[in-house]
Image (cartoon, rainbow, N blue to C red; front, side):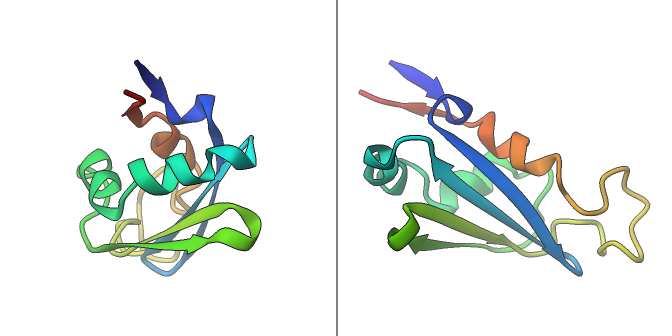
Length: 104
């Protein structure tokens, strides 16, 4: 069985220069371990390969049952230099939530 991440979690986006920060927070804390198992830096990099040019680092934040992904070279130069429609990367939080995982 497959599910989209938006069925299990919500996400927020932030930025600093050309670096995008995405959080992934399950609606139900009991799904945190599932997200830790299924959502790796490599799987996010593959999912966002057309957007994120640099390295992605995953941080686990177990005290609030969340994951954070720091995505380097993701905003076409950053807010002050990018001609992108979404210079802050806010829509990329939903791009992450479109990722599909296998629950089997």
